[in-house]
Structure formats: structure tokens, C-alpha cells
Length: 189
Image (cartoon, rainbow, N blue to C red):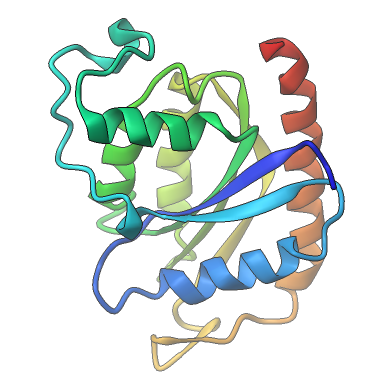
């Protein structure tokens, strides 16, 4: 078993969300990997109130006052990299995902990130926003991404049936992510 730990973060908490089958699809492909251990983190299982820390995370430097903040920090700190699975809401990311990212600072630093999105335009605009957020949080994000269209990769806009062309991109995304995650482990050491 590898010492590299990657979290697949499901960024939507909306009832009836399409993200769970997408995250499960990513996890099924990650399960075949031997070079990293992948675990699913569902934000629905980590209900964070709107950011309520009295000190901004960049200044708190990991010293959070609320129990839910400390628990979230411990969860995120345990990983070397992340695959963010996100829908596109109003040309951006869901509020729950943005809030979860904003809660922390140093726990994200010098980690690798990859993006999987879905939406009418494949969630491309959500990924563009996530790239800026990840950069500010000092995460190295990889070039390869997966973008699923609500028109072609979902039946009736609700049943996930990804096109076969996505299978070629998955190992590239994992390879890039694991490469950067492994390299950044040495930076954090």
C-alpha cells in the first residue's frame, strides 16, 4: 500500500445532487490504483456553518477556536492531495465547497489538486474558479481535468452515464496528481 493519501472531495450537498454518482465513478477508477490510497470525503458528512472563526484562517495558522473547524482541519491535513468533484452553480462552485475551502489555510498548503466537474458546459467555469482558489491556498493544481456535460453524460439530466472518451483522461489525471502530491510531500517534510 502506498503512503500517498488522496481525498476525493464531493463538493455538492444539495438534495438530489448528481455529484454522488460522479464521485463514485472517480472512486471506482481510483480503486484500481496501487500508487496512492484514495478516500471519499462527502461535504454532506461535514456540515460546516458559514465561516464562523473569529480569526481569519490565514492568520490563525491552524489554531482554530471551534470544534467543527478543528475536526475539519484534522480531516484535510491527513491528505497529500485532493480531487475536487464539483457541479457548476451560477458560473462558479457551490457555496458548501467554497465555504469548506475557506475554513482552512495551512492544511491546504503545498498539496496537489485535480478537478472533476459537471454542468451544462461540463462545469468548466467552476473549475476555472477552483483553479484561482487553489492557487491562493498554495495548492498545485494539475492540467488534466474531467468535465462531464449534463447533455451528453447524464440521461434525463439525472442518471450518470459518462461517455467512453472520459476513460482515457482518468489515468492522466491520476498520474499528474500523484506525481505532484509525491513531490510536494518532500516540500512539507
